[in-house]
Image (tube, rainbow, N blue to C red; front, side, top):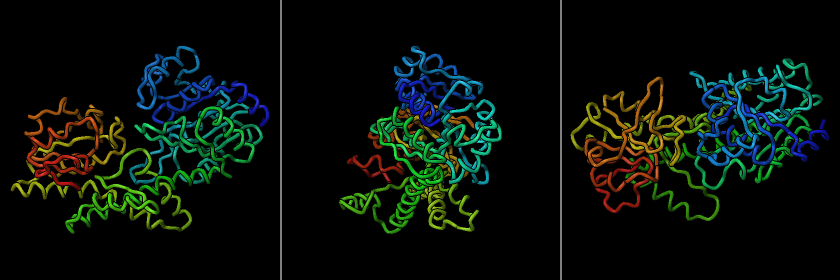
Length: 437
């Protein structure tokens, strides 16, 4: 099986299947197809399948003309029928792994997808889980489902491994193609063959590790590292505010050290599909061993507190004008979880809006990237334009995303008060009505 698959990879005779055509899956499918491998994407959402088959892109990190060309050339297609699995040699599982209402891992998408894959899995196939999860998922959950459902034996009839996605939406330098990959397979042969498949597609380095659990833990480490450091900075930001010190100037000063320091910045909370979630996966798994990840849990508590803290600060700003949040109009600028993207998954701005509304404030928002969002069953629409009248109508403007295509000078000129939680207005000279987190 090893030599057969290596030969097929070298000859570009591998047919690729990608399960889940979201922020991870579609860019991966496009890169596989661009490398010359026939690629079939699966998604349960018919609208995504139809858009791909029509050559219409819906992911910011995918080049529109690339997608259209690949579809026209027959290298890329999409389906909502799992039966296509019988025709592929490589399967990448790129489905969501959210938290449930108890902040515990929800692996239902992984479980359901794997169950369907097993029904159609054939011999000499590579299966790779890319969805972020806790260490042990590939071997403890995915492997038994595949073996029991297909009657095939892992390592003998098919290869299985884990390769964590590393997608940073909006990153202008690192995309799927040039970001280094980590591969951990069940057995050396699986690792070698799966790594060869990724090397045939990507420009970034491919790091082979000894097991799926190492690769799974590596991904958790990446994002927990950021979670903890952001938690440290958020806590220091709260302390610096009490002390009358600018945390932003402190960070800028510390950043002059050429070694031993990496800057992280405060904000209204954590957002995105990884950093706010991954530490919960690890702390949940750690409890199985009677181990409590105290430092991780402390950072999560701090970061989870930031939306409410920012609303408390907003109330204090309004108090200076003898106003309460109750009955005031607050204009929120930016609901995306990071600058210059249309992704609002786990965005702290949504929590900020929720907390503001709990106080009785009237909240409107403007985001040139996110014209509409859905949160807890409610659909909210962005103000169509950022105008002088809109800014003047607000008792307070809160900046919660550092978009670069917003006229902050207009905001400063016409706002009664501004609470800039991202320090995006740092270069404006007139700062009389601006308070920074």
